[in-house]
Amino acid sequence: MEPIQTSLQKWMKSHNEFQKRFNGMKKSVLNDPEVQQIMKENPSLTKEAVEKQLIKFYEYQSQSKNCEKCPSREECINILPGYTPEATVEGTELKLAYNLCQRERRLEHQRKQRSLINSLHIPRETLEATLDRLDVEDPERGEAVMQTVQYLEGIGDELPSKGLYFCGPFGVGKTYFLGVIANELSKKNISSMVIYMPEFVREIKSSIKDDSMNEKIEAFKKTPVLMLDDIGAESQSSWFRDEVLGSILQYRMMERLPVFFTSNYNLEELEKIFMTSNRGEVDQVKAQRITERIRQLSKSVPVYGKNRRG
Image 1 (cartoon, rainbow, N blue to C red):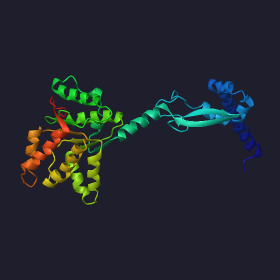
Image 2: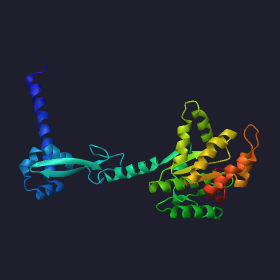
Image 3: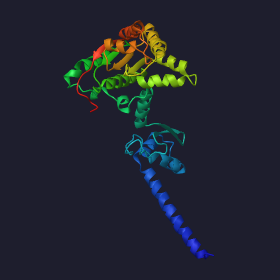
Image 4: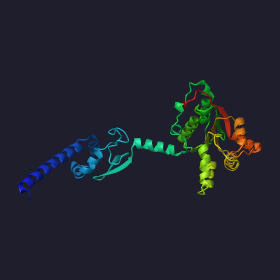
């Protein structure tokens, strides 16, 4: 058994160290300019009252109030990361409330904006596209840049009923324009759905098995802004062309809801693509019906330039 004297010495040392830390904390709190300001503004808050609530005052004093002590949001030093304390006094009692800090508010805003963009198999680079990163130096992209900026500047209380149909060679950055528009719309609290067409076809086919097809089609019909990426690249049946895609475009045309497209084909070429199904069925009238809806829903914008995927 450890001698009592040895145990007592350990206790004394521990007690002295605690007392030393406690005194240091008390000195730090009482000398803190923010605490002194609170005491000045609240005469009822005497030095004795502060000492009785020393732990609470230390909680307030030791934390960052305006992110000044935190290297970043991820390295927040506060008890509740992303929240900053606000002090009020009732009589002689200090009350602490916690509010979102400025960095967390910015992140919340960014999260809200991102939540306004729903995507189906769209690259992350596209979802993070910004207007200021558009290549405006390339003269072959000038028309597309101008039309994009004009569209965004023309948004008022209501969205224009026509979107844009970006068409041009493979790899020139057509999908990036969709990302730019989707992100700019999110800043105006307008939600959009961006869909990669080949995956869209597979998604609809697979949803037949779990009876979710109608629900998904309704979502595509009614989203404020619909964006169909790489239309014409998908292998589709006449059923998908007429009953799914045709139905969605017809609804949005009637309701004056904008649709944006990208394609490697102009509308005349796209009509020929739609004319023949994956089973070899040919139907020019129904193909024309689809392309006419696209004309009603969007303005054709050519995109050229260097291949950005090379």
